[in-house]
Length: 530
Image 1 (spheres, rainbow, N blue to C red):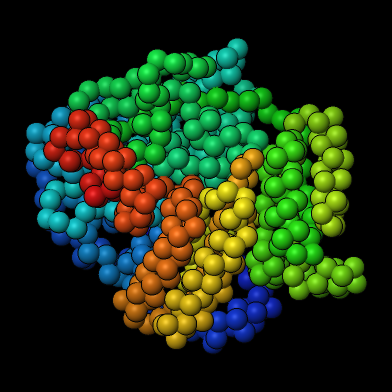
Image 2 (cartoon, helix red, strand yellow):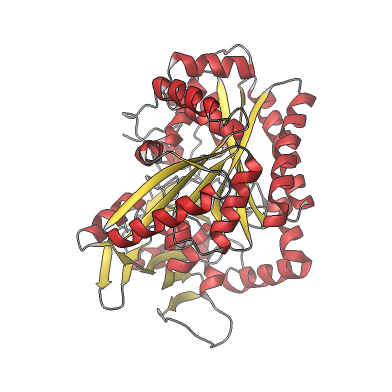
């Protein structure tokens, strides 16, 4: 059963060894635990629904609680401390486009705000009901989760938008194909959500980001249906696919998508390489990307993330062995770990591995084989469960990300982390902050920052500390000219920073499209842009 106030399946636990708890306590201070709000504490807060009666609408308090929040840190604070103050007035589980059209017409007639819901994994407030006193209906797309058609000649698959990552892969792999889109939220997030937020998977270097995979599809809007045929290319005016991509539910509800799929790879490996410094590792990644090294993934952790990841892995013997061996080889406290993947035929994997080792060796890289890569591969979708364990030990964790040209990567990453550390100094609190480069391009890379800090007894104080750090990091990102979101979307949390990237004229253009398709402002109001 899925957790109502955390990540994933209740039966899955991320165990931390005592050595990891000691490390965290030394880094952050004494750990203290606090009692979380109980299910009944939240349930009793759900008010009577403010909706006209309608056969397709479920107004049960249980369903409304389960659709009230996503996975952002403010969402966790609200659920765990029992401070949720807004719930959808009803939830509809959409089974067909006919049902959806019926609901859209009903909502338009009755001025009901609509929130599309896929897997509920948003970390920036995409699915949260607006605070003002207006009726709100959440449209849960999860029943629409089937592979409709597989064109093996064109290697195109038509899939309903409510399908979550594992279900997509199971259906495709029965026929020998894969979509290859593997975000960290893969277990729960859905195809429609990926498209609406411009998602990026862990192996996007090989398979492409969601905009590379999205070939066409269907959206229901308040103005009517919008169908985009799958074409390999077109010069027929502006690309409407890129208006749907990243639209975050403001234009309509995506019901199905045609996506580009590939045959299952013959072989896939993940390997680890250590570099003596962060700078050496960054140079190696840039050389690999600009030299068209045919890997499927490159992920470089800074020194602190390298150390923390190894300690939190629970592989104490491996950590001790690695520490002794690396120190002997002069890979000391500034060492960084790169994990890279190679996907394809046996021959391709063999040839690319030889070339990869040569590229990394030229930058001082120490190739350590596949052991570390296999550990990462085995746990890559289990890592989100660490949030549950840390929270229960008294630690909050959050992430943020951006993308910048290569010439700005090192100084920008350093300053973003420093801005977070300074924000916690102002609060007289300690923080553990580190980063990695997780998606690379010829002209730049994404910076993914993680920060851990102690929970407080008072939820308002905890939220204030997060807001201070988030604002400081966001302003630093804008200072360096980075995107405010590389893969998480905008939602509610990033709206104040969007104009810096899109410009005032650009925002006016976006708003004009909103008004054209949604003249009453009923679709996911307040998200992407106020």
